[in-house]
Image 1: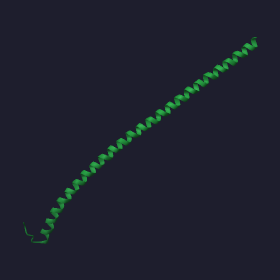
Image 2 (image 1 turned 90 degrees about the vertical axis):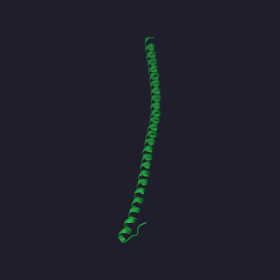
Image 3 (image 1 turned 30 degrees about the vertical axis):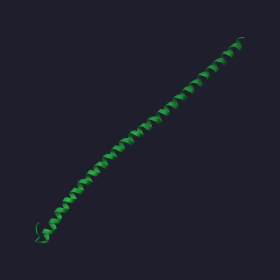
Image 4 (image 1 turned 30 degrees about the horizontal axis):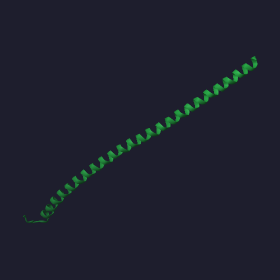
Length: 97
């Protein structure tokens, strides 16, 4: 054990102990921040993947809906053309007959 002969010696002994404690606390805080930042980055990647999956699902539903509408429209056009052709054939038959 050493005896302090001046106020400076007392201040330096406290300074050394407090500096070591501050360095240890700083390294713990830095480690915690790095862990937290890694967790935030991982969560961001998960959110991005989830958003991409949701977008793909919504777009697949939209495309399926559009394809179904296109099939219905094509079927309606085909039936309309068949009716028009039947009307034209009936007119020709009436004029010829």
